[in-house]
Image 1: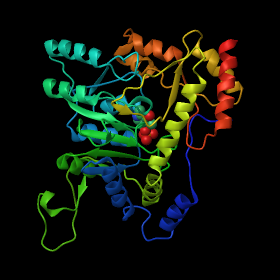
Image 2 (image 1 turned 45 degrees about the vertical axis):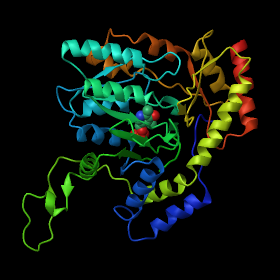
Image 3 (image 1 turned 90 degrees about the vertical axis):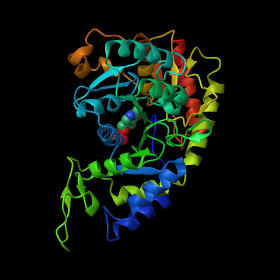
Image 4 (image 1 turned 30 degrees about the horizontal axis):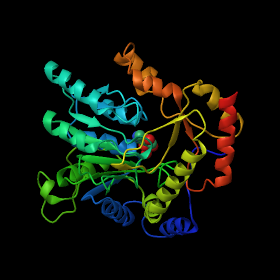
Amino acid sequence: MISYGRQSISLEDIEAVTKVLSSDFLTQGPQVPHFEREVAEYCGAEHACAVNSATSALHIACLSLGLGPGDWLWTTPITFVSSANCALYCGAKVDFVDIDPDTCNLSIERLEEKLVHAKRNGCLPKILVPVHLAGQSCDMRAISELAQQYKFYVIEDAAHAVGGRYLKDPVGSCRFSDIAVFSFHPVKIITTGEGGMALTNNPQLSEKMHLLRSHGITRNPEKMTHVPDGEWYYQQIALGFNYRMTDIQAALGRSQLKRVDEFVARRQQLAARYNRLLEKLPVVLIKQYPDALSSFHLYVIRVNQKSHMSVFSFLREAGIGVNLHYIPVHTQPYYRQRGFHNITFPIAESYYREAVSLPIYPELDEQQQDIVVSALGEALAK
Ligand SMILES: *Cc1c(COP(=O)(O)O)cnc(C)c1O
């Protein structure tokens, strides 16, 4: 079986992990702050907060921006459920902005229309979560202009886009957002097994996220209500969680980070080769914009002359682990039962009916890629 995505683990990665296993700290040691500093530096962001998943990062990012009951968070329907669930964890409400038919990212035109409407009805969002689908950045400059005009915060869900670029800056620089979130799940660009990170240029947000990551407990006397003289002491000053990343994971992340550019270059090379090989087939690709340089976490094709399910099943039977990204979030039963039973986002829904994700990962070789393309040709000709 050729999977749609998989990790690339080197001997050096294994050595980095085993070194931590025989050290003094498996968690709360020096590896996590090192990893945070290295990722922040790579992205050109001021601060980073490592956590146990991107889902946790989204949750504490929302809390640190004060999201709560009565507030709205908007995101795209074409994403993993986490981008929306983070609002529900905070007791806030979720709504969606339909996608752009070319990039399949959240549509700036639909967003602007929806903001005009929401302003009239007094229900503007507190937070927008744009998702860089497949690794291609959204139009962040346009989004940040709207954020200033309509006064909402922006959390980039950059789970797919580690190593990608926008206007030459690394994704994660937060030049046009308040917070950006990465995932280090094994199918993503670099991995820590499970893991995530929130980046920001705002020291207060960083401090809040670090506090919430670890139970809301501080050891900083300046943050405490009182400090007993000369005693060892800590105080819980917020309701936090145990969302910590271990040192074992951070060591793997640090080792993986050394190869991030190599991973992305290989993915871009495979994507370019797919583009050439698919030229004669009746498929539509996600349009790439010159402002963004995709990390190609996913390589999505759209089959508009056939049901994507027939293509999907044919390829799965041929041993090719294609995938579908994503079932629109508002069509999930949990969302259907909570207000979205007769709401449609037509572009997202028609995109979903056509989309198939082909295998792409650094260790996929040309021979395997040829097998994928020839099976796809057969599936489309049937
Ligand atoms: C993978 C993913 C997440 C969740 O990441 P975890 O680290 O598994 O929690 C969130 N958003 C998007 C768009 C993703 O692809």
